[in-house]
Image 1 (cartoon, each protein chain N blue to C red):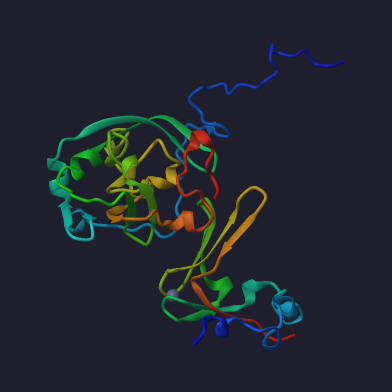
Image 2: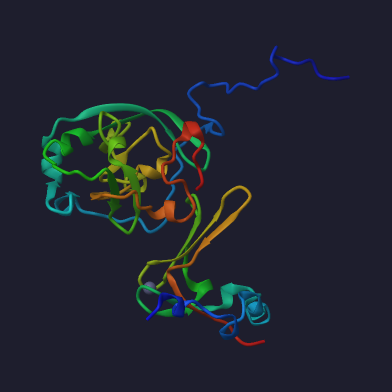
Length: 94
Length: 196
Ligand SMILES: [Zn+2]
C-alpha cells in the first residue's frame, strides 16, 4: 500500500473543534465523575480517590490500588494536568 | 516623599549568596511526598543497579560495610524553600559504581512505591551524589525517605529520591515522575530550571 493512502482525507473527518458541544457535557464539577483506573480497572468517584498535596504538584491516587490517576501542577502561568492513569471518565448526561 | 534608596546599583541582592534565585531559606524541613510512605524493614531492604546486561545488588548490611562519608550540603526544593548546611551520612555513588560496567549515560532512579526520577550518570559520580541513611546524626526518618534516600544536592531536591530502591541505566534521558509532569528534565537550581 502506498503510504499516501494512509493520510486522512478531507471528506472522512471533521476537525476537533466540532467536539466543542459534546465536550460541554464535561464542563461540570469533575469530582463527581466516575473514573476508571488505567492500572487496576476499578472505578470510583474521582472525589473518593486519595489526594496528596504536599508535593510540587497535586497527585490523585486510585483508592483501590494507589496508582497515580492524575497529577495537577500550578507552574507559574500554566496549569499542567497529566491524566494517563485514568482510562475513562463518566459523567451523568445533562 | 520617596524612600531613600539603599544601594548604589538599585539591584536587589540575595542576602545569602548560598541561595539560588527565587529561593528562601528555612530552618524547618518540610515533608514533601507524592504518595503513601513505604515502610521497608531493613532485612528486606536492597538497592540494585541494573545496567541491562547485569544487576548489582546490596543489602542493608552490605551498604553499612562500605566506606561511609559525612556530607554537609545545601538543599533546594522546587517549591522554593532551601535548607542550608544540612548534615547527612552515607555512601558515595562512586563507591557503588566502582564495580559497575556500563556504557549508558543516563540513569532512572527508582524508589519503593512508584516514584522515579532521571539524571545523567555524570551527575551521580565524582562526589556529587550519595545514598544517605542518617540525617543530623539520627537514622533517616521514613517521612524524609528512610531507611535510605538519594542525595544529589546540586540539583532540585525532587532528584534526591526518597525510599530509593535502585538505578536502571538508560541510553536516553527519559523523564521520571515529576519530569513527565512538566518539571525540568535536569533541574539546576542555579539556572532556575524548574519547569520544562
Ligand atoms: Zn487502581
